[in-house]
Length: 212
Image (cartoon, rainbow, N blue to C red):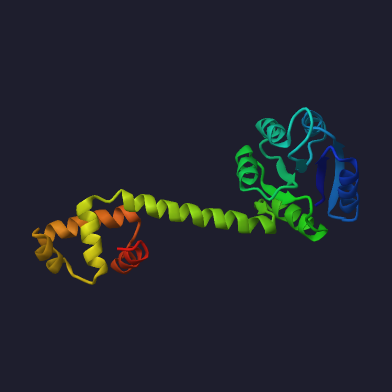
């Protein structure tokens, strides 16, 4: 089955280069071209392509806004955003608009074909060089979440967590804090819920990592 591609980009040399790459493949076909967002919407309605390769920065209407309008009318249509920028914000904004892919204009022809193949199969595709940006940002958010969860602990819960990290059991903690063992168990359960730890080993690792 041949995949029909609509190209939307306002840079003539770039769009012609893409068109030539598409013509070289027997499994994909150039359905048409558009040089701005409004024309992309018009061509999408007229040509009903399988996939649109859409530049983010275009005159009259940018690619993200055009993608939203196209997908509102044709939710089964697939859109791969093209960009010069390896930006987490643009990737997230593109995905929120409904795009299934995000590749950089500097990508190789092999990666372009890989993106088209993945999107055709119903998968998402993010540029290889952009994955590191997304992973780094995800790890940063995870660390921020961990710090926030630690701040959500009450003063007593922080005391219990510190003693747990020191290797003390519930009975010893109860004695040190002059509370019952059942109260220690309740505090421990609340700490695990707030930090997302599912075992004592995980809780101790968390406590050590957070400096308790």
